Amino acid sequence: MAAVLFDKYFVLNTLGAGGTGRVLLAEHIYLGVKRAIKVIDKDDVLKESFYNEASVLKNLSHSGIPAIYDIEEDESHYYIIEEYIEGESMVSYFKHKSCDISHILDISIQICQILEYVHKSVVHLDIKPQNLLINNNKVYLVDFGSSIEINGGYRRYHMGTDNYSSPEQKSGCEPDIRSDIYSFGRIMEYMY
Image 1: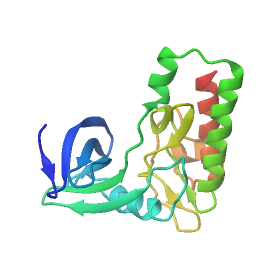
Image 2 (image 1 turned 180 degrees about the horizontal axis):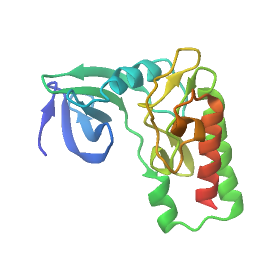
Image 3 (image 1 turned 90 degrees about the vertical axis):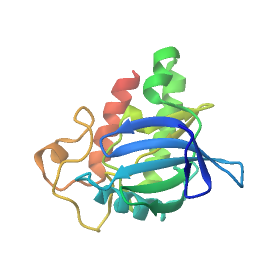
């Protein structure tokens, strides 16, 4: 995949793909730094998640959340250029790592600290092992495409992942921070 996007990002490979698009790993040609580029197809019925994610990320500044650097678009795609978080998903991490209770508690506390910060203005609505990255025992929360701003209204379609979504998300009721807390409980169950 030897492509150059926007005359400055050399695409190295694909990091992953999900319901609303895919994420590429790229290197900024001039700065020599890696970036994650989220690509969303303009024909995707959930393309509003692009604007939503960019709007939410621009207002967040936390060491456990990727920074947003830019947004771009071409004829067929929208792009969000974000900080590249090196690490592995919680799914991958727990496949090859045996964790004692103190390590699981440390991970849980870090997630709570991120959520405490996020919940000042945003409800994430897609807390799941695939959206939690771990690198050198540090936890990061990614993928804010499903999130809503607190007191900013909400979208009346189901977002999130079934095994981790709260009952109100599944039933179409208005979610709030309790929805993320429910998902966090499912994360703790997953880790144990």
